[in-house]
Length: 248
Length: 382
Image (cartoon, rainbow over all chains, first blue to last red; front, side, top):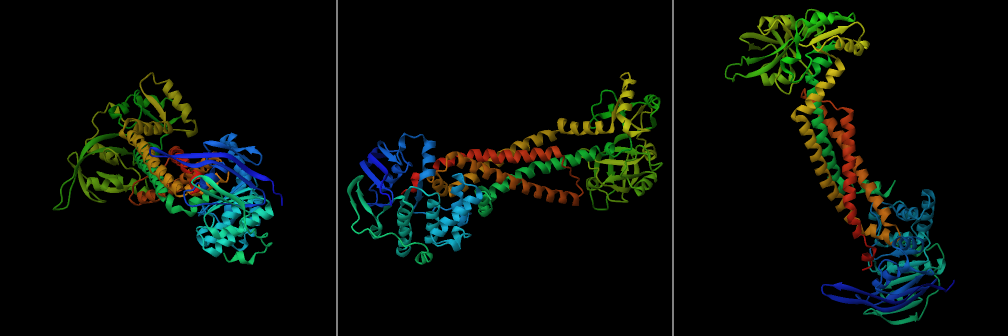
């Protein structure tokens, strides 16, 4: 697996206005994430980790600093081009699953592929493959209301992975799930890095996930406290099928 | 199935208010149009369903409705009409206003009303002034001296039922026939034979006739004969084809009476209510899905695509609202039928209402677009 830089940031600063005061959420943060690696961004609530991810992914413009993603100066692009960049290269997994209640699993995933330009049949084929990869082959026709939290998060992951993103951002992907299901989810993220070569950037404050990280960045009060390789990087996730994923 | 349509179907409860608002906006207008058209058709029925191909009236009359005594012509005109070789029969449509009093059963209050009287020629089944939808039984019933026929919808107003007696111009008349499809918006209409009319002393001026009902040899040439008659009139009368007069009558009622104002106001009100409720419903429904929309934005779906999604959704709401308008209007027309109130739905108005509802839904969609600004994907990263 390649280990080239997928995304890097230099001197990212962001401050928010609350009432009459300004809060400096990011203070000249430098950041780098590589293809094929899971980079965990950890820190307590309010430390600025989510803001960092928002700035890195083109969702929130930093006040200062530069983001170079896939070789492009992200914030130099026009808003429409940033949307297109995200469509082409970025996947997102949120704490809430944010699935449309009217669509079944297959349509949730196929929807985004259609926006990417796939034909209806190609989108559905590809969506089925992505759902198979997260162990949901038997749940293709289920709507969110008929699925467990873990299954919903796996649909969200399939939706993020279906377009084969090179950058995968996950914000507290396990915090709404029980420990066992959370582990299944983080293993899926690890597979996205190891098998698809994506740069996975995962924000969490769950210390149990550290075991799955290649690099761990600790952030507090808008500053990077430490940036070091994980002590014990686990090997690649087992190849499909994944019987342990099915019960999540 | 598109996301917009599947959302509308799956979350139909969320959109019920908008669909109902649209359906009732449409119904508000169509039901009124239906009733007014029914009334207009009732009023013009004497012309629409007459056997005359051409009607000759006073020169300055614009329609049979509200034209007063000017709708008639001097008696000397009748022989002039016969000069045209195409003309086979001319009769005047005699009519007058009179007071009506019923003879109520003991203990009931007497009802007095001013009625419009029209006459028909009952002497033979195909007389030119006898409407085509009069049954033979009605014609025979009206042959009885001093018998009258009244539309079903006017019976209660005039306080009578079949075979009851009443008083017109000091003479007792009997209700011997009940008509259908001749309702009246102004005065109730009473129909009688020309003989009864004369017996009641309602025919006053022998030198004047009512509008002339003209039958010609070949009805297909009505327009040609009408032009020939008008060319020979020297301003003494004006000839109309039956279709022309019918159209003029409808126009007169819509334009000159309060009906036009009613309908215009309903259209305006329907639009306001429709846009108000539909846009608020759409905004609520979009707000409920704002996180899902924001996640699409995060995944790179452009704002333009989301706007299209909202407009498609609003258009579908309009289409469903339209379907319910159709259903409700149909139910109302069934009720109308049952109550003897004829309703008519001209295609022009149906198209107008359909366009109005789609305009309401799209306008509501446009008004709801602002909500999309709240779909900030960065807000999902909390």
